[in-house]
Amino acid sequence: MKLLDFEKPIVDLNDKIDDLKRLSEEGGVDLSNEIAKIKKKADSLKKEIYKDLTPSQVIQIARHSLRPDTLQLIKYICDDFVELHGDRAFRDDPSIIGGLATIKGNRVMVIGHQKGHDTKENIYRNFGMPHPEGYRKALRLMKLAEKFKLPIITFIDTPGAYPGIQAEERGQAEAIARNLKEMSALNVPIITFVIGEGGSGGALGVGVANKVYMLEYAIYSVISPEGCASILFRDAKKASIAAENLKITATDIVGLGVADGVIKEPLGGAHNDVDFTANSIKEVILTELGKYKKIKADKIMKERYQKFRSFSEFETDSLD
Image (cartoon, rainbow, N blue to C red; front, side, top):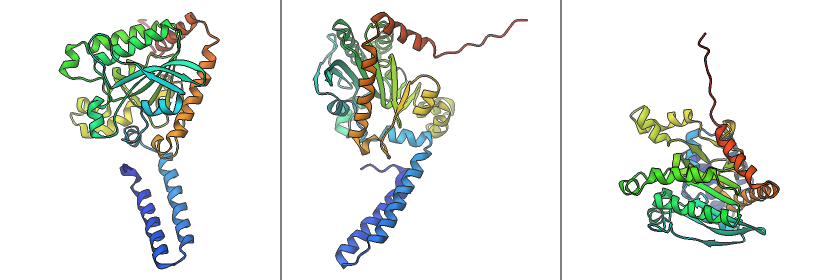
């Protein structure tokens, strides 16, 4: 498993445990007491480290190569899933996936960013950075969901929309802007989960939702810390300073009122127990779907509109 730099003290203790187990087996010596002591110390140290993570450390967990992605979560959460492809204009963008699904008897449309877990898959998925056709596919599926009165579930996990020349030539900004406009007016509920990185407009292109939840070690930001540091400090290596000030962690985002709740992750991150993480998300989905069954379409739309209108605050000074 990929080792995060701040986890090294825990790994060192686990290595000692493995050495003692090997010595015990080969030498026929009972070292169970020593092993238990070190294991207890390792568990305590892990809890201590994860109790007070810095934003830079949270970013490492959010970007972990084994972090559960949209397709994995769909497998755990949904009873069945039929993927739908293409934007009916240019091509199918594999960095956004979507389709019809059933969750405990509830028919829904599921859409989300899709990264890869190795180099080959990351290249195929474009590292989870959609082209315009990805956002147009997402909008096509959302319109289909509205037509058949299906709630929409979206999963956000992207460093941002793809900024390449080809994407710009095909109208990247227009595609995202259209999604923002159209999503705000959909008459079915949209429930969004930030499961890894929530990067700028690339995230918001599928994130204009009635309810937004974040996994405990997910991040949500208008710009990546590296990009922010490059602009403000002319040095991407100062990303940790930018991360401290961007307020990108789940706790920060909920505190700002942008997200509605934090979903607890297993100790060490979602990749340590995908089943636990998926079940936690599923519980929230079922709870929210139950609530929205009792709310009329016009109120659902109005709630979403008011949610985003309430994000900004204005202060006016008297001219007197």
